[in-house]
Amino acid sequence: MGPEDALDHLIAEYDDVCEESRRIAAGFTLDDTVPSKRLGQVSLRWIYTHMIEETAQHAGHADILRELIDGATGL
Image: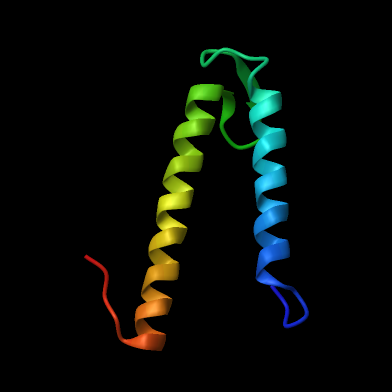
């Protein structure tokens, strides 16, 4: 994110990409697999789990940065 990027634009772009991902994933079952260069075959179930883990990890990072900036802690 650069200084010229508006937060509302980035959030709207994120929402658009999420909607496209949902549309594509709707055509598959949780047990359908795709090739991964590092892991071999991975299922849609594995991809969803991985994305949940990644989102949670990065949300935690953002929380740490916010706490460093404003000193407030979450519950």
